[in-house]
Image 1: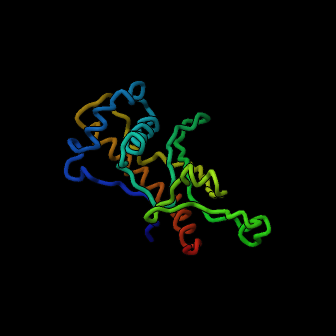
Image 2: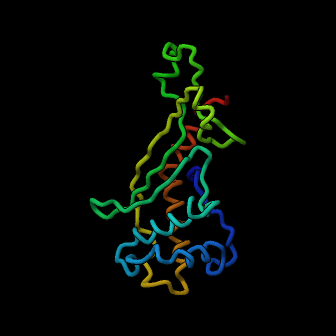
Image 3: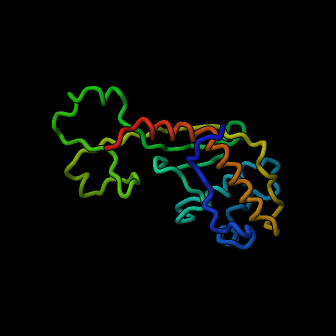
Length: 192
């Protein structure tokens, strides 16, 4: 059984990962890898590759995600050097707030605004006059490192290919671990 797809690589440089737009972005930001080259653990390299493939550095990002995903950060765990992902997911109101509206008190509470199906921050003008309650699930998950490629010794000819490989592994593991959460929240949230 395939895991739900909540994350994917926007493969604009599908034909040649060594010369496409992501490879160009990596070359432009090669300094992001200073202090990482040759690291025996692949975590810092994978995290840097992820950071460069996602907004705000890459806009639009080379990594895309489900409309309910607000952000994803990949970081080295300072406790043991493992790889952690931190994912913010738009959620529905918790049962304690949705089963009873006594707290609502005709204040006109609104939830997440949507534009063309995308969840967005409310405009400052709206927040000045309307109360918003925007539930978010914060998901912290350790990602396996087994399939991550070894960290290159420097920005060689296979640098972009290695970074792309790391992204593919991260996307696969996020889909496996976090994808079912995102898909379930989407399925449980009735249309507005």
